[in-house]
Length: 94
Image (cartoon, rainbow, N blue to C red; front, side, top):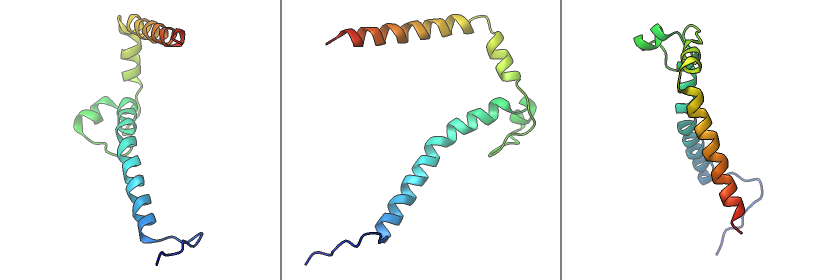
């Protein structure tokens, strides 16, 4: 005989599934979070390995170096042009 599903009932499989999906979401999100906190942390503290979950110190030096690099804007332009060209190409195909 088949079990009747009771609306609103939470069984072990639902809890396990939610736990696994939450863990997977955290594992996917953490690298992006870590890159962000490294980019706004003090470079000396990053070299020491003093940070894991939250920024240590505050510095926008990484953004200054990136935005003043000679090839940054030419690389950005190439990326934007390639993206636009690809989108226009795929939009033109029926």
